[in-house]
Image 1: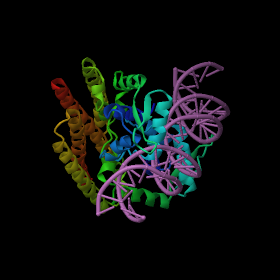
Image 2: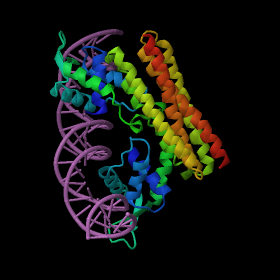
Image 3: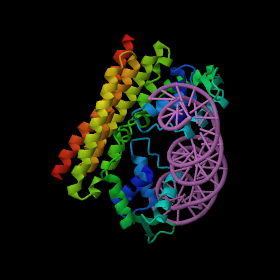
Amino acid sequence: MTDLEQIILGVVGEYGPCTAYRVRRVFAESPSGHWSGSAGAIYPAISRLERRGLLRSQKKAGDGRSARLYRLSPGGGRALRNWLSPPLPDGGQLMPIDPLRVRIRFIKRLPPEKRRAVIVEARHKLRDLLRTIVQSHQDERDDPVRRLMHSGAILGVKAQLAWLDEVDRVLAIG
Amino acid sequence: MTDLEQIILGVVGEYGPCTAYRVRRVFAESPSGHWSGSAGAIYPAISRLERRGLLRSQKKAGDGRSARLYRLSPGGGRALRNWLSPPLPDGGQLMPIDPLRVRIRFIKRLPPEKRRAVIVEARHKLRDLLRTIVQSHQDERDDPVRRLMHSGAILGVKAQLAWLDEVDRVLAIG
DNA sequence: ATGGCCATGTAAGATGTTACATGATTTA
DNA sequence: TAAATCATGTAACATCTTACATGGCCAT
């Protein structure tokens, strides 16, 4: 069971009976670029989940298109709870993956006078991103779990920004 | 050009002429479970890079096996610098991907009495991980960039731990 | 000389991306 | 009614994982 499939189960569970398109939009609206939610990933994944009996579907009434409403089957609920429950994967599988750090690792490949520009631009883009997430966080008043998702993202990006300051200091010396 | 390919270019550039196996070990020794560095990914990726003229190779002397030593070609160096240089991708592509947060998002699916256990276990595993990274950080005295990689990982995991405390508080209420 | 690690690779299969195709519904 | 968006899907292609196969090197 891939992460994508697990998350689809979670999203279907969260948004009740909903269409595949609705699931796609949840991915598309995520600020993270990691979860692209392309049609070619979502529709086949949902078909797989239905074939395995983890999702059920029914035709959406009053819709001339072939839209279907999906919901979790009992087995799907169990699969979802099982994914969430201990034992969790090892720490290495839980730690954040940082696309910025992977690049900066090789920054010495750039001539010294260009290194600074990378840091400056990264800081800029992360600050912009941070602003939009903070905005979403403030706009979200009702759902405490969703607020937690926002604050998690905020803490993660702030950690990156703090780290960038450290990178800046270290590179200035050496 | 995938991330894996870019990182391989970076690693080959970093470790000078080196074998494919050496590249694999760099991935395997990374604390992050994200970069598995399986043979079936690395060897084909290196072949692709050589076909495209970004890597050059020569037979390793005095080795009865078919081991080859790879190094960056001039074009490979350019490709690597180009990857590192502005313009960077958008903020959404730079922000950290947090496998823990994706799970906790759906934690309400668990019965209330089991939610705490998830947090406790996650905290435990992340603390263990943090200890080992801190240890590597202290052991590494020479290379400032490598120390930066460690401190980036440390800041990231600490942010997760701080967030877990917040999750704990919020779930205790709601 | 044999067991364990070093080292290279391949095959089968699943998953994901991009791009395209199709048509319904809503909005200006 | 025209344009935008909703909605579902498929085809071609590349990539990644898992598992396996092969054989050299090294220490006891």
